[in-house]
Image (cartoon, rainbow, N blue to C red; front, side):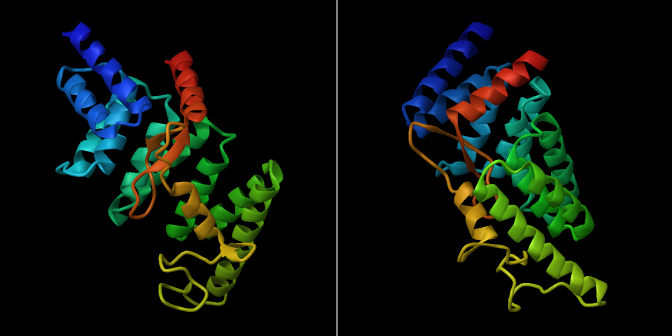
Amino acid sequence: QPDLASAQESLGFLFMRQGDRAEALHWFDRAIAGDSRNFLAHYYHATLTLIEPGTTDGAGQAEASLAKALQLNPHFAPAYIALARLYLKDDQKLDRALELVRKAVDLEPGSFSHQMMLGNLLVRLGRYGEALKLARTMERSARSQGEKDMVRSFIESLNQVQGRTDAGLEPKREGEPGMMENGEPPARVGSRPVSYAWSILDRPTLGSNALLAGGSGDALYKSFTYDEVWAATIKALTKG
């Protein structure tokens, strides 16, 4: 019943804007059960499923919803990022995560956050040369001083890691001095590591000015402003 699913989607979007995540998820659940053809309904269903308490097999449901969102609209970059962040939890899926992030970068080449995620993923895969090449490109295109500082610190860390590998040494691993707990190089912005700065970006914003999407590490969500998601939606719709 397409009309019923459409009405249920509308209720989901309404409660999403009002900040009632549990009620929004309820209506997105019903819309999807009714074979919703709205890619945004599947996308928001995935993000809410990951963070709402009481959901069973949240990661599995989210993966299915994000895959459906991309099937319905393969030009919607936030869904690629959200699915990639979900795959970051599984070392066996890192190559797939890399494919998804590259696709998001292709769709939105001006997105600093997408490029930074790509760089971090290349480091995690041990592909330091590729990460450094990307970072050099990002350094030239950085728009703000904060972006420039983050990229320069990232490059510094990459050079240190590459120096160890060129000398026949293993990159420092978890627990060794100079590495973060997740094994990433300790790039810094001021007195804080870049990974700390990146974690701030990954922290969810639950106010009315944010929408929930995929996150990194143990937090499988990231805040996108309405403007960011709306811009990506318009871009996806015009290509779809």
